[in-house]
Length: 202
Length: 202
DNA sequence: GCCAAACCGGAGGCTGCCTCCGTATCGTAA
DNA sequence: TTACGATACGGAGGCAGCCTCCGGTTTGGC
Image 1 (tube, rainbow over the protein chains, first blue to last red):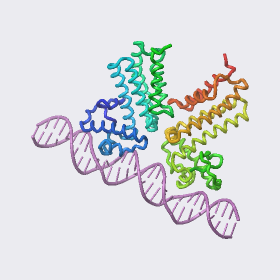
Image 2: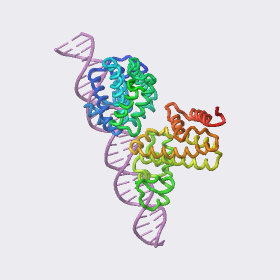
Image 3: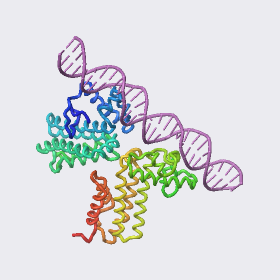
Image 4: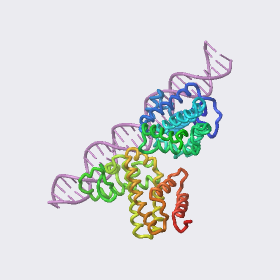
């Protein structure tokens, strides 16, 4: 159904054996996801397929070959966000101190959650039609969160009476609240971080 | 904007003084809301305005005079559901024993929440554009819940260490869960009721 | 019963999703 | 390098759904 190749394409349940995408096709696939991301962020559910195709500098035919339904494109954008969040976890875990890694990753998580809000209506529909999408993604993110959180806990810079699921619910819920904004989120995140840090322990 | 009259029409912020709807207009208004309710329940976001008009035995023009945007119709249907839930609270509080009233009302609440699920995508959009709709409604329902709950608590048949907001969050959350179904909801509700009832207290 | 105000209805405009197929490009084998 | 089959591109156009417009009808106060 969808190309089962390259970094950004998700693994399908049935792994059809097929040759990799042609170079131009792969390029267009990437450009489409990227264009969709920015148009959806800007215009939410107002975003039209034509506009996305135009932004990617590609015909609508090409768009529809890669993403037969609008929902498939939304799903791809969502998956990419999840994927980059997972990648971020491993990269900050490798490069930064445990505490900084946690801070940086949570910052990325807040940005991710924020950007998700704008096309939440679309996303909700995708979740309806494909419930495991939501579950899978949540689980993947939870594991990523566990990676940075547990590292911080093991080195003693984060209190250890919380787990990744707690953290997700707290920060995720905060971002999804109806009166959330980027500024408020950033502010609340520092508050949460102060709560997690052990030096400020009683 | 919208007719500010009769039982089913919601009070607008700016209370324009205007004569009541003509009899035929009021009749059509009611039929449209009712038709929209059933079509939306059956077909969710697939429901088309044409189909709703046809079900109400009315032209699309008439539909659009009453509800200029699709979202206005969704909102009206939603408000009607909330309203009937509030009405239910006062009527069961008047007619049934405190415990039975609580059971009946929660049963109605579960049905309401269940029916809301099917057009949640639409609803989400309405909430985006008009955030106070969600807040208002939640508050109205909370008060209704308080009516039956507190009555049960005052006569000693329900434990009094919970309040209406707790109840809403518990039962509402349960209904909104991704794997909810009518049967499961009914089953879980009996479970919750057993937890609330004081005779089973330790 | 009369008349102005209010309302009805459905043809049609417009926009956005998606399909179709002739043309262009890629990758491979000679 | 060339040639050719497989693969991908693109945009005109079909189609459906949202919404508008306005000529005809109904209502209700006098």
